[in-house]
Length: 253
Length: 152
Image 1 (cartoon, each protein chain N blue to C red):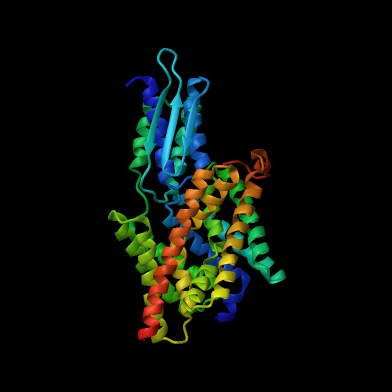
Image 2: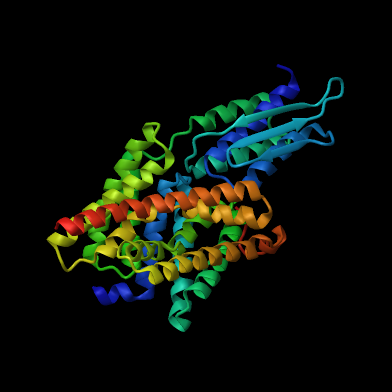
């Protein structure tokens, strides 16, 4: 591969990692544009949509070179965003060469994250904390902690399969509705609403919604619209799961 | 115990722990976790303070989002990390989870008017978060470059 192709590949790899890890559209675009601008040529282009990337680099001898890449699965990983950001900064500043940058990107791709146990407990703590601050009692907090851990296990298990993205949210709503209802039946002094609100909090599309509104207000209408629809679908899937569990259980019990 | 939970500091401490845990879920770098939590503390503190004053959730959310976003950009400048890292955990307590739940329950109980008003309040709060973030995000980079503290 010649230098131009390698550079485009590097920019696309960096953009793909950032987009997969939940970075904002404008940041992905900006990072790719900066990495291409080290050539010093005019009319370079970098475009990021919510599911694809396109970069174009003009060449002296042949015609312009353009590459596209589809980005499918999405997760949230802030550590990778930070690492790619730092890498692109030092690449643009000329501190590392193209080969070194490609190597570092490979390392970032395989970067370890928190262990499964830590993440499951984190789901529990998030659920507990939110049910406490939304005026729940200590009992609700404890119930939300255990249901939150259950949801965490479910999310980690489902993320290994190729299930559709709203499946996690639907099952999450179903589980939290079922167990909150059962807990409320066993201990009637607990508040079912507070347990459910707390435990679904880690699943709610707050990140997607915030990014969608930001994209819309910045003028990235395609990304903004598609993210808005995604956030809406996820919220509806959660609400549908909870509603199904509650309407079934409340009529049986 | 229940009285203590109504205390604004105790609530904000709960938000701190919840936001640190959310940082772990989002795989934030280990050394930034505490700052994610502190931003959650700050956001919920501002929100409760304003909510107690005028009982208007939309205004309180708007102001708290602005406070959180400003803090996130300040931290991002100081610690040389993307601002989204501090922004998202800070905003999480303000996400209208309660409104989503209330819309859902009123929908399955067949209360049409309440469903509409609850759904509208979701849009109101979501819009407040969006506008609040944007009002601070459009400020230029140098606006957050001031500090007596030494840069990392």
